[in-house]
Amino acid sequence: MKKVAFYTLGCKVNQYETEAMEEMFEKRGYEIVDINERADVYIINTCTVTNLGDRKSRQFIRRAKKINNDSIVAAVGCYSQVAPEEVEEVEGVDIVIGTTDRDKVVELCEEAKRENKKINIVKNLKGHKDFENLNIEDVKSKTRAYIKIQDGCNQFCSYCIIPYARGPIRSRKLDDILKETKKLAQANFKEIILTGIHIASYGKELGNINLLDVIKQVSNIDDIERIRLSSMEPTFIDEDFMMKATKVKKLCDHFHLSLQSGSNTVLKRMNRKYTVDEYKKTVDLIRKYMPDAGITTDIIVGFPGETEKEFKETYDFVKSIGFSRIHVFKYSPRKGTPASKSKNQINGKIKHSRSEILINLGDNLMSNFNDRFIGKTVNVLFEENKDGVFEGYTTNYIRVKAETIEDIQGKILPVKITGKENDILIGKIKGLLH
Image 1 (cartoon, helix red, strand yellow):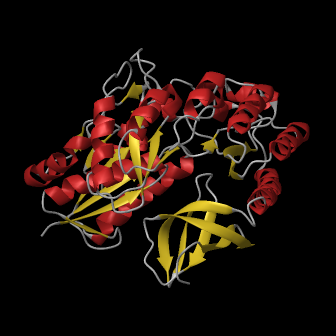
Image 2 (image 1 turned 135 degrees about the horizontal axis):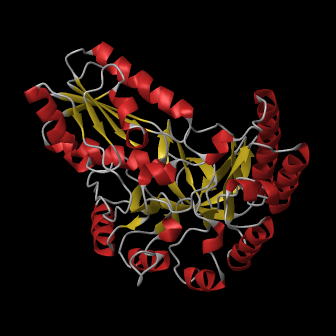
């Protein structure tokens, strides 16, 4: 049996696309092995958000060829899309595929092997309108499943290469989304996570459908008990959305709203399309309809020209919002973006210091948010079993663990929260043996 190994860099969308490609190879009789094992084919699903991502992609391409010099090595994804000639010159690469045509990856690998040739089929994405369906029928996890509903981005933030790597917004057909969801429901999945590069833009190019329509239709599928949304732009959410969204009982009260900075002047330089006041109004609106909602976000520190005053504005704003969890990133110049050309790059030590300060704040905010639920009963979807201690998440994305001698993996159960251990709440499952 032929063997294939995958290495994935970057976001959840990349992971989804990797799992879809894994399934393609399995259907053709390949065995999936670890990236460090000897394989006939190596697929490097690249990321290009930072220059570090590019470097890691090149390293794994070279490493794969060293493990088996006779193997076929394919570099696919975002880095291949924005720099196909650069990727093609990396020692050991046989195939270069961008962010389209990944549905042909098996055939291309076999063609490259059979005809002993290099292949580069990266297409120009300007004006590209087709959504590439990469369906997953056999998801490895058995509790939560991602469904990619959208691709591309039209925002062109000054630090971001993604619009160039992914092209313009394209939405997946609703029938295809529902077809995949029904298969996942039949496979006993309880939670669906709607994901994409910019899911708030779903349907914009179609004109007669939007994200809320997808949420409503998915909620009608029996056995799917939770619908979670991946990262969203804050400006998408308005009163009408929240009024209708709260009627969908399966929608999780968890919103990941990208902030990036709590300073209006930095946001303007980032080319973000909102102010801090507009962001706060969105948060207030969510909490008006969902008081216990988990609000998570991303923050970039050390953006070119970020002064101490601007950083303090971010710190104060983050603290005032009271996020349930934050992800902090140190700005990394990405070649090809306007921000990378700025002469006001921030010293690495300053970036590190600001990052540590915000991470500490984030830990305190998460602790404060979690404390609110001690003594309360919450519903938890249990995902992992660690020697009789099961762990899972609430609807508002708090991690909870509880002991039981019963097998509860994949079940949603009420848990009385009794305490916490670091960032994990501890509780007792109602009605079960412990």
